[in-house]
Amino acid sequence: MKSFAAYQRFNTWVAIVIFLLGSLAFYGVLQYVLISQLNDSLKAEKQEISDYVKQYHQLPVIQNTKHQWIIIDSNLTVLPKYKFRTISVYNNAEQEMREVRQLQFILHVGSRQYLVQVNKSQAETEDLLQLIAILAFGMIALLLILNYFVNRKLVNKLFKPFQQTITAIREYKIGQSQPLQLPDSHVTEIHVLNNSLNEMSQRIYTEYRSLKSFTENAAHEMQTPLAVIRSSIESMIQQNNLDETGIQQLIAIDDNMQKLIKLHQSLLLLAKIENNQFALNEIVALDQMIQSKCDEKKSFIETRQLKLQLQLIPVQVLFHRQLTDILINNLLNNAIRYTHEKGEISVILSKEKLIICNTSFQGSLDATKVFKRFYRPMQQTEGTGLGLAIVHEICRLAEWPVHYIFEKNEHRFIIQFFKTVAK
Image (cartoon, rainbow, N blue to C red):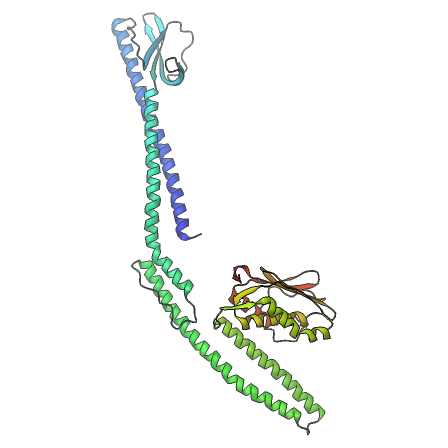
């Protein structure tokens, strides 16, 4: 979730909760005040009746109105339980139940006592409360809407430099001709952040250029002595004055030299992939390339009596032809090398994925290390240990997730294409 969205959601919910709690509290306090006013009015009416009885020793003439009426009952058998209470009374005129506030008290007139009930309608109080509630909730809704849009505009303005910084970082590639340059900002925090990132970028860029220069120079300088050494070994092998032991030693040296050359080429390729030195703008027909690679390795497959099954459909991807060739070649070589004699290899290509499987009786590889550099199972000593690492780096560059699983004595390497498949 984006920080602005999280802030906006949190701010909105907090505002809603605060306004709701405030509205409920306001409604409760207002209701208490209005009921207290009704109670005061009923007390005043009681006081008038009591004063009249004290002065004239008789009951006053009762004049009831629509909103206030008094009931005097001389048949008093039980003392009233409540002093103030709210009761519901049916209103014949409006044909509905209405809330009435009532005060009950005992009135002594001479030797007799009466139960007096002073009633006052709460209709006006309820109407006033409803009006205030509507106004209050209307104001709350208006404030929430204004708060949302004001915060949105304000936060967008404040976060704009931050979004620009994120965009610049996302689009920056370490292989560009200059380090990352983020602009100054009037927001202090963004200004400090941009300056820190600029300084860090400058250090990384300087170290990257130094490392790249060293790698390129070392790779270039190593090619010549390796070629000279290999040529000298081949020349010595062809001489007739060497005995069998000397020839076997030179052959062993030549084999190790071949491994060293392959290791050098693999490390150089990994460095180029990591430095993004390939333009990924070529349309590659995967089905044709896989078929071609299988044809190239047909004799070796037949020598080991392997059974090859191909399930290919026409699929084109926008990538780099040489890197795709290396990817498929490494996966096929890995499958052929580690499949037992008379075993099976299957290649399945669809619009969504490429699956290369091979049978094996040696158990599963370590799925957490299979794509690590120089990882080789203990029982295997062939190869440089970089083939699958190169596969992983090529897939990372292409943004193709690659997975390894082992099921039913079968190694499976799965590459998913997703939206990178060209149509």
